[in-house]
Amino acid sequence: MCGIVAYVGPKEAYPVILKGLKRLEYRGYDSSGVALLNSGLKVFKKKGKVAELEDSLVGKDVHAHIGIGHTRWATHGEPSDRNAHPHQSENGKLAMIHNGIIENYSQLKNELIKKGYHFISDTDTEVLLKFIEDIQQNNNCTLEEAVRIALKRVVGAYVIVLIDQDNPDTLIAARKGSPLVIGIGKGEHFLASDASPIIEYTKEVVYVNDYELAIIRPDELILKNLGNEKITPYVTKLDMELAAIEKGGYDHFMLKEIFEQPDTIFDCLRGRLDAANASITMAGVQNNIDQIKNASRIIIIACGTSWHAGLLAEYIFEELCRIPVEVEYASEFRYRNPVVRPGDVIIAVSQSGETADTLVAIEKAKEQGALIFGVVNVVGSSIARISNAGAYTHAGPEIGVASTKAFTAQLVVLTLIALKVAHAKGSIDTQRFVHLLNELHDIPEKVKATLQTADAVKKLAEKNKDAKDFLYLGRGYNFPIALEGALKLKEISYIHAEGYPAAEMKHGPIALVDETLPVVFVATKDSYHEKIVSNIQEIKARKGKVIAIVTEGDDTITAMADDVIAVPEADEIMAPILSVIPLQLLAYYIGIAKDLDVDKPRNLAKSVTVE
Ligand code: AGP
Image 1: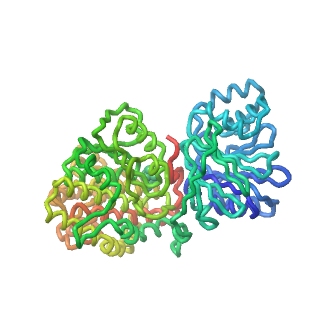
Image 2: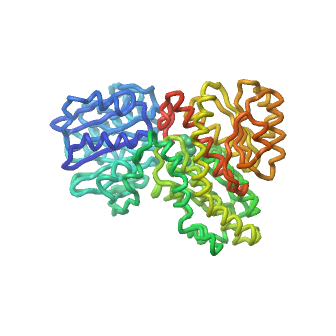
Image 3: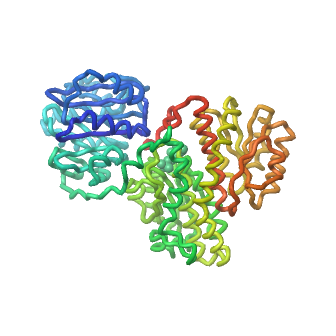
């Protein structure tokens, strides 16, 4: 949700910022802009993707050694040149970029209008900047001081970065609720929403915490709290390679990430699963094993695709650990005065680790005494840091806006946790435990085999690309996969799709069925197989077009369905890791057939840092 980049040092700032914005474009891509300081402040902004900003600046003087840049996902005001960041102060000397939402902006705006301030944009950002400017002028103080005073009155979430014409070697930045990473180079500093714009210059980074303010010059990084006390920056080393954030020969990040899944799942299991010795090593679980295995209840909090992973985890935990599980949308949980007891364990699932609703839901549960266990992909992210314990999914950077490899990694980690807890609790017998560990061990190879369905799925996509609606149905472990398949299709192809429990379909959605409606059954072999066969018959009897994801060798469904994609046989608990892959590919190839931007679907953003 908005990407920010800034640079100060001996390099040309504009190319560094532009490259950084392209890397962060997954966070928002409706407009972008840069502000550069070189004998005066120059601000350039453009509606559309970063490439349009780049084109508009060809031949312009962009020489500078300090600058800030922003790629926007609109919250206040439509995408336009006018609403794009950076915004400028009334006197034109300051420029600011912002990621987040200022909730009390209209009150502040009214106060400023009464004082004679004018507003060019509809954004909350311009209000905050002019509020800072007003404080600086009234108090005759430094910009740093004015920012500190302003932020004490601000309600909401933000990362802000300012440059000041009167202090042309200094960036001022502050954070609450949105991410900010500072890269430390030799006589230079880089700021960004995540590490991807920084990685090729330095691996030394500081993750700025909430309520911290940074004063950054080429040779100096000063970190303070809002009480003006200095804090020693905690420097960490990035464990990421540049190749991980590049396309590596694929046309799109989404396709690359789908095809990376055998490796990401392998990485996720590495050092944790020892099938030969029937053991699982997960320090985050082991250190809290008594609390987790004796939990009165597990509450899984997440949004979107991560919520689907949580839903599947509910089935797995209840089956293996016999602990009651509830799966909550973070956005609902945070506002509905939930009952959380000290014996409860919260599992927060998030790829980005920055999702605003999930973050606040965690804080709420933490206040009520629950243990927070984070299942997060981005190392050092906010959710990883506020959790009491956790396990990283190790899927590597996911750039495509639609989550694919991060989802399967979440499924693997959640399954490992459930197995470890069940083993410690004694709720699983040894034979089944060993069997499931061996099944997990084999999953990367089976994922590789599943990816060989890509050509068949591509043909299926061509055949169905003009459908107006899709219905996705599944039962048991495959029900969350039906939801995920439908979400992927909506995100990538803009075709309306609904996911439903296959049996529940006859209580309403069956009215939609006719010969034009593709109905995707996620129907790999499991305990409900005969039941789903009956559901397929119900659809066929109404002339529905059935596309079925089945286990290899399933002649029964193959004979009934119009089209079939077969995946390798696996235990019903692991089968969803395979059955989701053709659905990811189907969404991808339909998006491509419709000539859509699959890596940056309209209106979406990778990291939803607003509520
Ligand atoms: C996935 O394809 C989505 N773009 C979206 O639903 C995402 O899963 C959701 O916003 C949650 O994000 P998180 O995992 O980073 O918390």
